[in-house]
Every structure is written in C-alpha cells, then in structure tokens.
Amino acid sequence: MNGLNVGWVSRRAWAWILLLAGLSAPAAAVAEIMPLSQIQPGMTGKGRTVFQGERIEEFDVEILGVMRNVQPRKNMIMARLSGNGLETTGVISGMSGSPVYIDGRIVGAVAYSFAFSKTPLAGITPIEEMMAMDSATSGAASSAPARSMTTIPSMTLEDLAAAYLSTAPPLAPVPPVEPDGRGMAPLHLPLVVSGFSPQGFEKARGFFAAAGFHPLMGGGGQIPVPSAKLPSAPALRPGDAVGIQLIGGDLDVSAVGTVTHVDGSRVLAFGHPLYNLGPVDLAMTRAGVLAVVPSLQTSFKLATSGEVLGSFSQDSAAGAVGEIGRMPRLIPVNISLQRSPTSRREFKLKMIRDRILTPALLNMALYSLLTGEERNHGDLALEFDGEIFLDRGGSVKIEDLFSGNYNAAVTNLSGLMAAVVYFLSNNEFQDVGIFRVDINIRSTQEARFCQIEKVLLDKYEVSPGERIGIQVHYRAHGRESRVEEVQVQAPILPAGSQFHLIVGDSAAMQSVERSQYRTQEFVPRSLDQLVRILSNLRKNNRIYFKITAAKPGLFLKGEEMPNLPPTLKTMFASPRAAASSATDLSRSTLNEYQLPVPYVVRGSAVIPVQIRR
Image 1 (cartoon, rainbow, N blue to C red):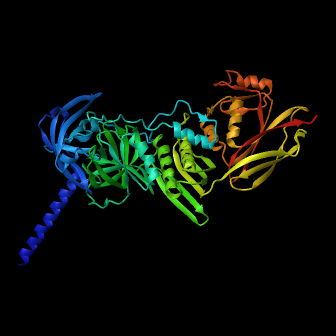
Image 2: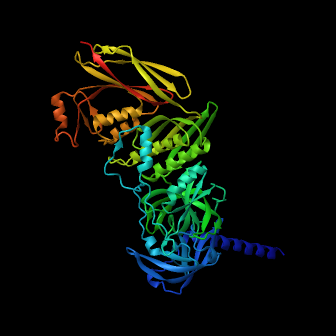
Image 3: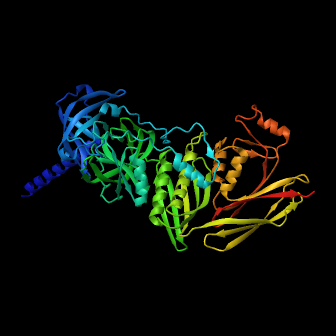
C-alpha cells in the first residue's frame, strides 16, 4: 500500500515538473523564421492575439500572395483571416503586431487592412523586415529636427500661448482613408485616454485622430493585468497585448497593440510605425483587453495599460523595437490646484520626452485637469507660477494671471506652458532635456480685470535725476476705482530736452517696442538668452512704466542697446562685429519699472515730461 502511494506521488510530481517545463519553455525558445522567399499562395497558418483579458488565442490565416515593393524596398504578405469572430468584425484595431506562424515558423505581423472591407483581409509585415530594425537609441527622444532658427515673438505671455496654439507643428496628418475602402492603411492603434475631462478628451481626440490613432475614453487599471508570473516565464510573449504609455500617473494616455516577437529582452511589436518617430524613449507596459467592439468601419479592442516593463527605443516603418527591463526617462509633472485656502488638489503625472509630443501632451493634460476641476462657463481667474527645470541645470520660471469666460483662461494657461516647453525643446543651440515641471495654480470664480482710467504726475517739469510721483487710477471689474502711487527717477538729460513716460499694460508696451524696434520677433543668440527671454516676457498682472527719449541706440540680436555714443554705435552696427543686421533706434529706453497688481491690466497713457532749464 505504501509503495503504491509513493508511486502515485512520484507520478504527480513528474506531472508538475513537465507542466512547469512547458510553461517555462517560451522564455528560452525563439520561433524559427520563415523567409519571404518561401511564402506561397494557399499556405495556411495560425495567428496569435488577445481578444479578451490576457489570454492569447489563435486565429486562422490563409496566404493570398506577396505584394512586393509596396513602399520603397518594402513588401507585404496578403492574407485572409478567420476564426474568433473575425469573419464578422474584420481585422481589428489593436491586432497590430499579431504574429503569424506557418508550420511553427514565424512569418510576420498583422499590420494593415482595408476600411469597410466585407472580409478580414490583412497585410502582414514580413518578420525579416521587422528583425532588421535598429534597436539603438541616442537616449534622447526626438520626433522632429530642431528648427533652423529659434524665434521668440516680441509679445506677452498670453500672446506666446496663442502663438503656440495656432502655429506649433502637430504631427503631420495621415492620408485619409478612401471613402470607398480601396486604400490599404496601417491598423489604427487604440489610444486609451483615462482620467480626462470630456473637454480634455475632445482636445486629445482631435490631435491624435488626425495622426492616425483611434482615441478611446477609458479607465486606467479597470481591467486586471496581473504582474505576477512564474519566475521562469517571460514578461511578454508573442501575441500578448502591449502598450506604449505617453502619459502616466493621475492621467493615462496609452496606445495598445500586440507583441510580434521576443528574443531575450528584445521585443518587436506593431508591424507598422507608431508614427515613424525614429529613436524614441517610450514606456512599454503590459496591457489587457476588456472586449472587442465591432464596427462597420474598423472594429477595435477596448483595452487598458498596466505596469511599465521597459521601453521602446525605435519607432520605424516596420514597427517598434523595445527592451524589457530598460526603464524610460520620463518627465515628472507636478500640478497643484488651489480653489480656496482649505481646498487644494495635487496631481502627479509622468510624460515622455519628445520635442513635439511633450508640449502637446502637457497642453492637453493641463486643459483636461482644469476643465475637469473648474467651471466651463462663466467668469474664471487663474493665477499661477510654474518652473521648468532643465537637465543641464537652471530653470525657467513663469508666473501670470489669466481671466475670462468660456475656458479662455484655461486655454491660455495650458497653451503658455506648452509654448515654453516647445521653444526650449526646439531651440537651435543645444539639446535641452526637460527634467521636471512644477505648476501651482490658484483659481477664483470671478472676472479679475482692471482698466487704467488716468495717470497723474506731481510735476511735469523736472530737474535731471529728480524723483517724480505718479498716481495710477484704475477701476477693477465691478469694483470702485483704486489708486496706486509710485515714484520714478527722471533721466539725466540736457536742460530743455524732453522725455516720455509711458504707463500701460503688457500689450501697450509690446506695441511700443514693435514700433521702436521695427520687428515682430526676437532671435536669441544663445540658450542662456532664450531662457532669459522666456522668463521675462511681459505679464498680464503688471502695470509697466517705461521712460524713452530721443537718444540714438541699436536693437541687435534681440536686445536693445540704448543711448550709445556715435563711435560705439558705428562699431556695433558694423558687419564685422555683428553677425545679424542691427536696427537703428532714434528713441532709446532709459529706464523701466513694473508694479504687480491682482488683476489683468488694460489701458495705457503716454505723458511728455520736460527737463527744467
């Protein structure tokens, strides 16, 4: 009896050993490749993908033929898919990268389809082309070359935000699908957007849909994506759902596709470009599938992302290359929103590093958080200070006040922060990495505007260097008039001469400077000057004071050189001394002051003052 029991235990132990060996086999085994030259019409095989949860399931594949040179030196295998409901759903967005095998050998990845097709016809990217992708990365993601010239508009922070929103280059739009469905196109990647307000989601959908993604309102972590696996099992397997996370933390934006091939820690996925960004540093995550949503145009997987497993380092025409265990360098974004002395909310985000995507993602994230937390109609004021820390050391500090209704303040604030990040990331002088972004926002549900009504001086004829008392009368929206008193010093000028005291808002000063310098923009000569310009653009909540006089000067390389002696003016204006042409100034700025006020200022005054004889 004891002998029989021991034998039974031994057989059960061997069964467990064989089961564990079978489960761990994929970690070491790498499927053999079937070259394109051996692919023949009529061959049949199996594909692998996730239709629900994490379970990898098979579908049937029938090879129809090979389309050669569909793009320069790019080939495509045409196939008909079936099984697991594909006959009714067609090829599904989210299947991008699903591996296809014939006789146990990998052929390629499902990557293309026809919109509105009545049968699931798929274009398969040959595995040879995917394996030829370079997995090297420079370490700094870059979706676009630096602009040939860094130009900063001669404007206020509010105008800088508007300029970015109207001119910053988005990802180039993908060619539209032909209405009759005759155009084969890459499968759209489901882009799961979680934690966004409805207004923020619409903003994100407009941006990403034009770039070939399929934005979906989702919820992070709703689908169980377990991280615990057998120690010997791979983190990802061919056919697993995999995500590319663009924003993580309290908000989530992740594109979801399928793993094609795993060789050690190296992962190939998608079979077509995310957006052909080249070297990238994007977070690679687990993903799970809640359901397949059938559609007359293109069915798609409703999915969510899970834990970060590594990073994708290359986004090319044949797909994406990543490495498990190599963590991406992300940008922490810390946002504090205070609505009252006792009400404060903190948001923690992490964003990818990219010259074009990072500013756009920051814009969308701020817009979504603010429209989700604040009123969408009626008066709103947003006072804020922010700091953008750079990898090289140093930072850009920004503060301002925006007020308005119908999301005007929200649009300006989110656009401004995106604009500063964009100009830093795309400067012509050197690669600049954003290390961290901190933003503190204080909101009130009121209009905070004021109008300058009049400006009075205690004297209009002064001696050189004498103090001048100034009263600025202004009326805040819905309030009584207020008076601010300041003093400025008269410039040292010859007896009988005249100077002008200009008092006004940021827009008025901008107009004066554009007329004075005869330019609409500045061209910084160094990164340090760019940082200085961005940190010192004029703000809405300031009353500015400028003293000008008829003194010769130059405007050179973005900076005024006032009141120059003729010899120095000739030297600086010489082509031998200046790489760029100088603007001759007939009037120079002799002094500037600013006065902070708790309102968005509007209005101006120009007052002539005489130097006493």
